[in-house]
Length: 326
Ligand code: UDP
Image 1 (cartoon, rainbow, N blue to C red):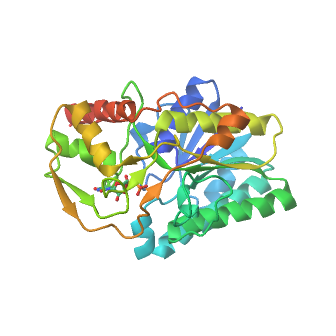
Image 2 (cartoon, rainbow, N blue to C red):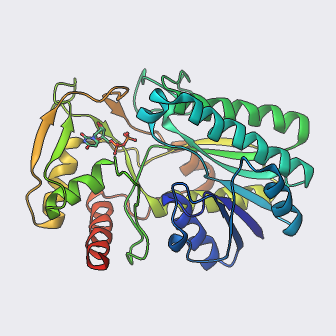
């Protein structure tokens, strides 16, 4: 099976490319390197290009007979999407529509789409299942929600079959530390906590300790990057065997508070994480936990690295390695 991975040089995309390559898929990464890294693409072919370049997309689809597309390329920071919504509507909607046009023009009708828990907005209950109301509260979540709606229409009208996977908190690194989380600037809790433990970051700021949770800090559902990628492989298999369009919530189903994550980071690193308490971060709901019962039941998706300790351990090995590399 020949698969196009857009955004294959990014955090999740690079782990996906490597996994697909190792499983024997023919993989082509398409990435403009605005947020990704060329040296993170460890398998398959690489084409540098942008979803805004229709001619490049046409040439790409003309050059390869893709069987399916896994679409990661896009902008991902909630806070930035509030400050600069135009960037998000351009990259995540206009770019995505260009991709769908190229797929239609070249009769590629299978897609796995990176969606997000942000399509649900403020949780009305947790864990969040697929029936939960969808009321995104920021432009990032809105772009993903609209894309899911577009996919319904494109399925009905053009026969585009898709699987939308709504990620909760992707975390961790490849168990052999060949790949890991690399954002510039880094904004995510686990890498920042580990960098504070290493002394690379002066201290970690905890965004709010006055939430209505047991210890006052926000609760999130951290899912190992490889477990997330496993779900994409199942999605590709489903589509390859003629399966219909689906959407699934994807997380471990277990929530950890910011303070609990810090404790685990200290245990794993064997070092103290210096912490200061700051105000809440805009747009942070107190609790986000997935009910991933549907994907477990339908496809027998089972996380291999469900324990937070293991997720943080892999992230730590990657942080140490990048330190050595300088
Ligand atoms: N967080 C924090 N300090 C940081 C980064 C994150 O307290 O420097 C908190 C954040 O408010 C949220 C949780 O850690 O409650 C996870 O945030 P992250 O940015 O990793 O992922 P998100 O939940 O935004 O997808």
